[in-house]
Image (cartoon, rainbow, N blue to C red):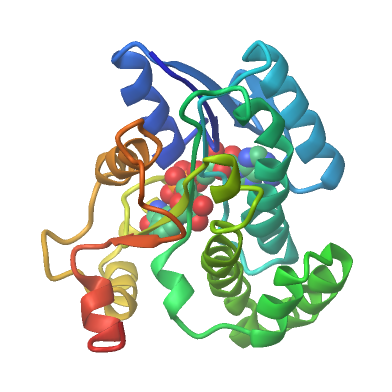
Length: 257
Ligand code: NAD
């Protein structure tokens, strides 16, 4: 059996991933604002450091895999803080614990939104890892509803690019740790429940994320892919964002591979 730290374990994809792993006998230490073993706030540098320290302590110092799911989709700067730094800084803080594993693995969640329109200035600021500068840009984007929605897509574009940039580095591949992302299409979770509850909301979602295969998915399909990416069997998948989206990426990007 393996030990996992999962952020966002209190709801949706993170909660489902934790339940599947626990049911098969693995150990899961969840991190979330509430409803998890570690009550932590990944929106601040202190919160991330404290959550990583507490998760490491509960794991006894060594963790086999970390799966970063925590995120939110509000048109606010908080979304950039949690979706980008709440993953990247938290994962960096977990590297010492991963170093003790014989088969360390990391996976995190991007989104279909990563290939939708973004605010390039915010993406670039996130990737320089300058949180105050990034949040100042997000603050300005949030002032106008037309640009506020770009905060989410920008945070996810930055996450996919961070994975691409960091995965081959000494810190990750050099330490024997495959680092990958999953980009889900529309998933039925508390995050999307309100939007999917009305015909108008569903039409809006389906217009931006067409899913020719099997339409909206439950969290299990994403959970099982995250579990494979963080399994011992994944020896060579590295630096990828894998779209699990009923064909949405194939429609939206077409030949642009
Ligand atoms: P969810 O809202 O059910 O779960 C997200 C969890 O993150 C919640 O438990 C929440 O408390 C936690 N979280 C939020 N802010 C936090 C903070 N500051 N500190 C700690 N935890 C915090 O949503 P979900 O659908 O399970 O989303 C999981 C991930 O999947 C997110 O990164 C989301 O962006 C991504 N995603 C979801 C969909 C979808 O359609 N549901 C599509 C693409 C990507």
